[in-house]
Length: 173
Image (tube, rainbow, N blue to C red; front, side, top):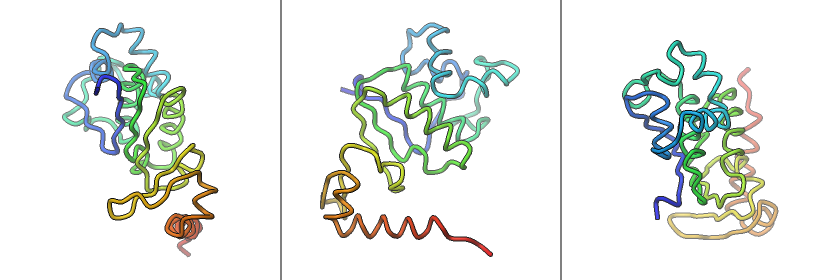
């Protein structure tokens, strides 16, 4: 079953190996060109090629030599290379700065095209356009539907949406 699922976690773990081999873990028999194409589609090619050893750059334990956004894009490249029909995104953009979040969102859009996608998210803006949102409270499903349907029919979802909208305009003066 895991062969049919690609997972992009919030906290990406990379092995102390080359960038190419960390991407290739998605499909061990992938050619160098397939690895390069997956990196391009994951918006990772520029930062990889900017490194002196490019794809042969060794990343530190856990990917410590890369930024959070770079680690996330390597993880997405791995998932793109795997090309599984089901994609699980677990808070994939929650710990990114605004610049990396844009690049990662673009890479995720490429990853999920034509796939069944399960998203774990607390930032409701990141799931606003999905086909079906499942609201879980204390381990129980309390509602499901589109964003618009849930705003009308689920008090909890409407409250969470209102709070996030209110927080988005906070300013320090």
